[in-house]
View (spheres, one colour):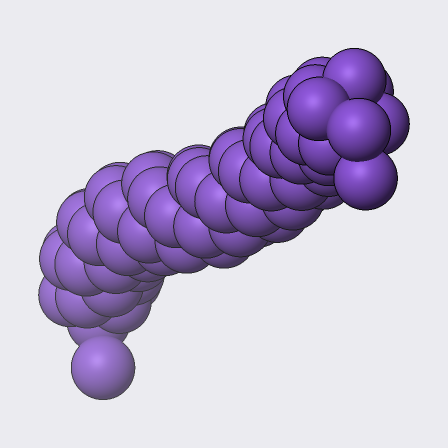
Length: 90
């Protein structure tokens, strides 16, 4: 092969390699974008799960407080009934 042909062949090969590198860099960028999206999705799920847990804990605390309030109200009602009962002469 003549030197000119060899040079042209090498230049063509170099052009193809440069093009391949550009394509690979594009693919790498896309993969990084996909990785970032996956991390974002996982983070969002984690935060949503944590939010659900905190909401449940608040609901439990509210229920416990409601139970205490009802219990105190009933105790007051029973005391009033006992007072009325005692006052009525029984």
